[in-house]
Amino acid sequence: MKKSLSYIAISLFLTGCAAAGYDSLRSTYYSLGYTKGDALLAANGQAIKVNVVSKKEKEALEQNVSAGLNKYGPKWLDAKYAPASSTETKSPYQMKWAFNVPESGNAIAICHEDYNSNPQNFSTTNTSVVLAAFCLNNRTLTSLRARVYSAPDTEGFAKTVGLIGRKLLTTTNPERFDDCTNFDDCT
Image (tube, rainbow, N blue to C red; front, side, top):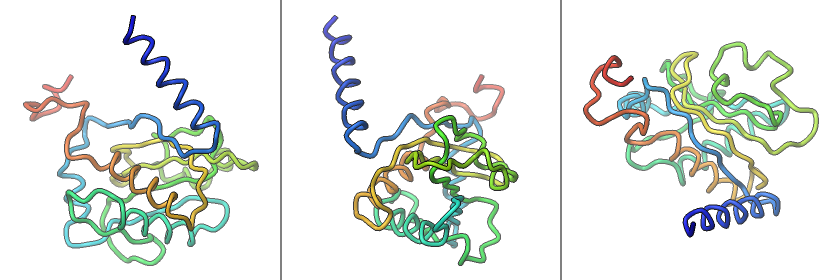
Protein backbone atom coordinates (compact mmCIF):
# COMPACT_ATOMS: atom_id res chain seq x y z
CA MET A 1 0.00 0.00 0.00
CA LYS A 2 2.86 2.37 0.85
CA LYS A 3 4.45 1.71 -2.56
CA SER A 4 1.19 2.53 -4.33
CA LEU A 5 0.86 5.79 -2.45
CA SER A 6 4.44 6.75 -3.21
CA TYR A 7 3.90 6.02 -6.92
CA ILE A 8 0.77 8.16 -6.90
CA ALA A 9 2.59 10.98 -5.12
CA ILE A 10 5.47 10.88 -7.59
CA SER A 11 3.07 10.82 -10.54
CA LEU A 12 1.17 13.82 -9.19
CA PHE A 13 4.43 15.69 -8.59
CA LEU A 14 5.66 15.02 -12.14
CA THR A 15 2.29 16.01 -13.59
CA GLY A 16 2.43 19.22 -11.59
CA CYS A 17 5.94 19.93 -12.84
CA ALA A 18 4.86 19.39 -16.45
CA ALA A 19 1.85 21.65 -15.97
CA ALA A 20 4.09 24.33 -14.47
CA GLY A 21 6.18 24.45 -17.64
CA TYR A 22 9.13 22.24 -16.72
CA ASP A 23 10.71 20.09 -19.40
CA SER A 24 9.67 16.44 -19.13
CA LEU A 25 10.60 13.15 -20.80
CA ARG A 26 8.63 10.01 -21.44
CA SER A 27 10.05 6.51 -21.47
CA THR A 28 12.49 5.54 -24.19
CA TYR A 29 11.73 3.00 -26.92
CA TYR A 30 14.56 0.57 -27.65
CA SER A 31 14.62 -1.64 -30.74
CA LEU A 32 15.95 -5.13 -30.12
CA GLY A 33 18.54 -4.33 -32.76
CA TYR A 34 20.10 -1.46 -30.78
CA THR A 35 23.42 -2.22 -29.11
CA LYS A 36 26.11 0.05 -27.74
CA GLY A 37 28.07 -0.93 -30.84
CA ASP A 38 25.68 1.16 -32.94
CA ALA A 39 26.51 4.27 -30.93
CA LEU A 40 30.22 3.50 -31.10
CA LEU A 41 30.05 2.99 -34.88
CA ALA A 42 28.18 6.28 -35.27
CA ALA A 43 30.91 8.12 -33.36
CA ASN A 44 33.82 6.27 -34.96
CA GLY A 45 36.16 9.09 -36.02
CA GLN A 46 33.36 11.38 -37.16
CA ALA A 47 30.66 13.62 -35.78
CA ILE A 48 27.17 12.17 -35.34
CA LYS A 49 24.72 14.02 -37.59
CA VAL A 50 21.99 15.99 -35.85
CA ASN A 51 19.06 16.28 -38.24
CA VAL A 52 16.27 18.62 -37.12
CA VAL A 53 12.81 18.53 -38.64
CA SER A 54 10.92 21.75 -38.00
CA LYS A 55 8.75 24.21 -39.87
CA LYS A 56 10.85 27.17 -38.71
CA GLU A 57 14.35 27.95 -37.42
CA LYS A 58 15.70 24.55 -38.53
CA GLU A 59 19.36 25.63 -38.77
CA ALA A 60 19.32 27.44 -35.42
CA LEU A 61 17.71 24.43 -33.74
CA GLU A 62 20.32 22.10 -35.28
CA GLN A 63 23.07 24.35 -33.86
CA ASN A 64 21.44 24.50 -30.40
CA VAL A 65 20.76 20.74 -30.24
CA SER A 66 24.32 19.94 -31.37
CA ALA A 67 25.76 22.32 -28.76
CA GLY A 68 23.56 20.83 -26.02
CA LEU A 69 24.59 17.28 -26.94
CA ASN A 70 28.27 18.24 -27.07
CA LYS A 71 28.05 19.85 -23.63
CA TYR A 72 25.65 17.57 -21.73
CA GLY A 73 25.17 14.50 -23.94
CA PRO A 74 26.47 10.98 -23.34
CA LYS A 75 30.15 10.99 -22.41
CA TRP A 76 30.78 7.25 -22.46
CA LEU A 77 31.30 7.10 -26.23
CA ASP A 78 33.38 10.27 -26.59
CA ALA A 79 31.24 11.52 -29.49
CA LYS A 80 30.95 14.88 -31.15
CA TYR A 81 27.69 16.07 -32.66
CA ALA A 82 27.31 18.33 -35.71
CA PRO A 83 24.33 19.79 -37.56
CA ALA A 84 23.37 17.69 -40.60
CA SER A 85 23.22 20.87 -42.71
CA SER A 86 26.91 21.61 -42.09
CA THR A 87 28.50 18.15 -41.95
CA GLU A 88 29.45 15.95 -44.87
CA THR A 89 29.66 12.62 -43.06
CA LYS A 90 28.51 9.62 -45.07
CA SER A 91 27.56 7.66 -41.96
CA PRO A 92 24.17 5.89 -42.08
CA TYR A 93 23.63 6.89 -38.42
CA GLN A 94 21.99 10.11 -37.29
CA MET A 95 20.09 11.65 -34.42
CA LYS A 96 16.81 13.02 -35.70
CA TRP A 97 14.76 15.60 -33.80
CA ALA A 98 11.26 16.90 -34.59
CA PHE A 99 10.06 20.05 -32.86
CA ASN A 100 6.49 21.27 -32.32
CA VAL A 101 4.79 18.06 -33.36
CA PRO A 102 1.15 17.21 -32.57
CA GLU A 103 0.24 15.51 -29.30
CA SER A 104 -0.31 12.30 -31.27
CA GLY A 105 3.15 12.43 -32.87
CA ASN A 106 4.78 9.04 -33.38
CA ALA A 107 8.38 8.98 -32.11
CA ILE A 108 9.13 5.61 -33.68
CA ALA A 109 8.22 6.87 -37.18
CA ILE A 110 10.57 9.86 -37.08
CA CYS A 111 13.40 7.98 -38.84
CA HIS A 112 11.28 7.15 -41.88
CA GLU A 113 12.43 8.94 -45.02
CA ASP A 114 9.01 10.44 -45.76
CA TYR A 115 8.53 11.86 -42.23
CA ASN A 116 9.75 15.34 -43.25
CA SER A 117 7.33 15.69 -46.16
CA ASN A 118 4.13 14.74 -44.32
CA PRO A 119 2.35 17.93 -43.11
CA GLN A 120 0.38 15.93 -40.52
CA ASN A 121 3.63 15.49 -38.57
CA PHE A 122 3.72 19.19 -37.65
CA SER A 123 1.41 21.27 -35.53
CA THR A 124 0.21 24.76 -36.41
CA THR A 125 -0.06 25.66 -32.72
CA ASN A 126 2.74 25.59 -30.15
CA THR A 127 2.64 22.14 -28.52
CA SER A 128 6.20 22.06 -27.08
CA VAL A 129 6.26 18.35 -27.99
CA VAL A 130 9.64 17.11 -29.19
CA LEU A 131 10.42 13.73 -30.70
CA ALA A 132 13.99 12.46 -30.82
CA ALA A 133 15.44 9.29 -32.28
CA PHE A 134 18.72 7.56 -33.02
CA CYS A 135 18.47 6.18 -36.54
CA LEU A 136 20.32 3.74 -38.77
CA ASN A 137 19.31 4.68 -42.32
CA ASN A 138 15.48 4.75 -42.08
CA ARG A 139 15.25 2.41 -39.08
CA THR A 140 14.62 3.65 -35.55
CA LEU A 141 17.02 2.14 -33.04
CA THR A 142 15.87 4.24 -30.06
CA SER A 143 13.32 7.02 -29.73
CA LEU A 144 11.93 9.31 -27.08
CA ARG A 145 9.06 11.74 -26.66
CA ALA A 146 9.50 14.88 -24.55
CA ARG A 147 7.87 18.17 -23.75
CA VAL A 148 10.40 21.00 -23.87
CA TYR A 149 9.31 24.43 -22.70
CA SER A 150 12.81 25.92 -22.43
CA ALA A 151 13.81 28.40 -25.12
CA PRO A 152 16.34 26.94 -27.59
CA ASP A 153 19.12 29.38 -26.66
CA THR A 154 18.99 28.70 -22.90
CA GLU A 155 21.04 26.51 -20.58
CA GLY A 156 17.86 24.65 -19.58
CA PHE A 157 17.30 23.64 -23.21
CA ALA A 158 20.90 22.42 -23.51
CA LYS A 159 20.57 20.33 -20.33
CA THR A 160 17.30 18.77 -21.51
CA VAL A 161 18.79 17.97 -24.92
CA GLY A 162 21.80 16.38 -23.21
CA LEU A 163 19.53 14.28 -21.01
CA ILE A 164 17.57 13.13 -24.07
CA GLY A 165 20.85 12.19 -25.74
CA ARG A 166 21.93 10.19 -22.70
CA LYS A 167 18.60 8.34 -22.69
CA LEU A 168 18.82 7.57 -26.43
CA LEU A 169 22.45 6.45 -26.52
CA THR A 170 22.83 4.10 -23.57
CA THR A 171 25.57 1.54 -23.02
CA THR A 172 23.07 -1.28 -22.52
CA ASN A 173 19.73 -2.01 -24.13
CA PRO A 174 17.21 -2.73 -21.37
CA GLU A 175 15.13 -4.78 -23.81
CA ARG A 176 17.92 -7.35 -24.24
CA PHE A 177 19.47 -9.82 -21.85
CA ASP A 178 23.23 -9.77 -21.23
CA ASP A 179 23.65 -13.23 -22.76
CA CYS A 180 21.52 -12.44 -25.80
CA THR A 181 23.92 -12.83 -28.70
CA ASN A 182 21.45 -13.41 -31.54
CA PHE A 183 17.94 -12.19 -32.11
CA ASP A 184 16.35 -15.64 -31.73
CA ASP A 185 17.57 -15.74 -28.12
CA CYS A 186 16.07 -12.31 -27.39
CA THR A 187 12.42 -13.22 -27.84
